[in-house]
Image (cartoon, rainbow, N blue to C red; front, side, top):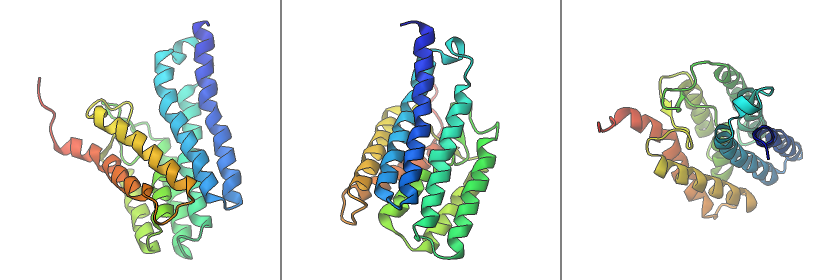
Length: 231
């Protein structure tokens, strides 16, 4: 297999995320939330592996006709932002105007964030909350908190998108990656299981989701506070 073919296959793998996004959207329209999140978890997994493959097989060199970064951003907006925001609004978990407020905050702020050329830090982390609304919305579906709590979380994270706070990329941020990457994989497992059992309130996955989500949310800020050891 030539380098050009391998690089093209990586682009095609990334593009499958659009198919999974459509399948998730179809499930969301029918209010099959468990199925919707299962497709989003599959898309999340693909998004986690296509980047390392793209760098390994040098897609920028061997398949430059397609812009992998742009392709990834388009799919990420669908799976991380648009579909989760629709689900949060349509599910009724946020009543009345709070649902509209969350819908507008998530979609508008995320569109601006995804277009921000300063979104990446020097260590390949994110500057500001990277719009991973699929993770927050899945936790909300699992725990079903009071809608005021949900609105507060949405508002705080929206503001955090534009603050100089660091949020790690589980694969690309090298510092503490030996811990962060397994926790991200565990989050994927907990998320998939929570959706598989249709967010049963007694599922063990809910505790795992909370613990792993808190770690992934705050580990980058912890790295800002704790200085690196000099070699």
